[in-house]
Length: 96
Image (tube, rainbow, N blue to C red):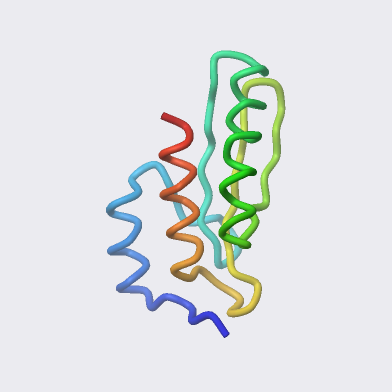
């Protein structure tokens, strides 16, 4: 089973991911990605999906036109784990 991050470890990890925030009302982290248009937003999701599949840890995400909202949590531990930090890092890399 995957271990939930301690508050200290989570805060330390989020310092390295400044665009990610604590999700309101749940044990998760979230980020809004804004692109120039729908094509770029969908392209981001497609590129990310191929890499995400290899991690076998899938995001909750929502797409509306040029916006992609992502929420990450690990259901096995009912909170944020290293898997979420790794996925957030990967998504930031794909978005650049």
